Each structure stands twice: as C-alpha cells, then as structure tokens.
Image (cartoon, rainbow, N blue to C red):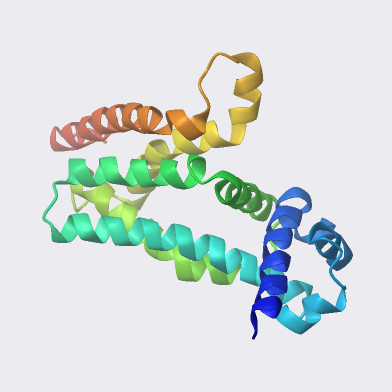
Length: 219
C-alpha cells in the first residue's frame, strides 16, 4: 500500500470513528462516513475494509485494544514491581480516568461507542468483551479480593469493583451536563488527575471498610 492509499485508509478510519460515535452503528451509513472523510468514493470502504461491518469492527478493535493495553500493561508492571494493593488501586483509577478524560476525540468516541453498545448491543460486542473486557474484569476482581479476602463472594467483589469505577464513569457520561450546571469547573481533560486522586481516596476508604467488616464477621 503506497502513501496515498494509506492516507485514504486513515481518513476513512477517523471519519468512521467520528460518524459511528455520533450516530451509532445502525445510524451510520457508508455514504456518511465517506462524506466525513472529505468526499471519498463510497467504494473505498469496501476496498480498504471490506464493508461497513468490518470498518466498524476495525474501529472497535483499535479503541478496545488501546484501552486494554494501557490497563493491563501498567497494572502488570506494578504487580511485577511488588506494588501494594493500595498503589495498584490508585493506578487502576488513574488509568481508567486517563482513558475516559485525557485522550480527546479518541477517548470521547470510546465512551460514546461503549455507551451505545451497552444500550443497543451489536453482534460485535461479544467478541470484544471476551477478548478485552473479560481479562480486565478478572484482574480488577482479583484486586478487590486482596482487600475483601480470598473467600469473599463474587457478588461482594463485583459490588466493590462497581463502586470503585462507577464514579469515574458517571462523571464521564454526565460531564457535559455538569459543565452546563457548574461552568466554573475546570475541563476534565485538565482536571482528571485531581479527580482520579479524589476517587482513589474515597474508594480506598470504602474497600478498607469492607475488609474490616468481613474480618469482624459482618456480611
């Protein structure tokens, strides 16, 4: 593939990212993607990607792979370095917030596409969840067990994980609304490290309380 062909393929990818994020898989059309790409011929989608389905899968693959690699690599590095659970918890929340808030168009598109997939799943979600979300989730549940104890029921671990990551996702999903109500709040693209640290402190206090309650015999 020469430079001009690579340029067209890249244009289509970024145009597809914007179009799918704005309209969803069902609402987006090949024609709309090509118009967003600057008037590229509609046959280019079939030529470079094999059609709308495979173009959408290519977008999901890049978004999920980038987030997955960032999560797993940094958590793995910390685990190899012998980091305590508290430090790995801080890193988990930091990376999660970074994915949601610090990557401009890509992060925003990931969030919107993920929300659309959760609301109206496409046939492609299962494969992405199995290959990317499952390893992340199992790693996070393992971290929760270090606070709650190895015999903690999975329902407790899932609730703990949801309470740790839920505030980050809530802020991301409702940020535009919050920005209208509290316009003096700094942009999350700049403020996310402070927000992540605040979430970490709240999460750590909660997880420690769960562990202490379980040690004391509370359910």
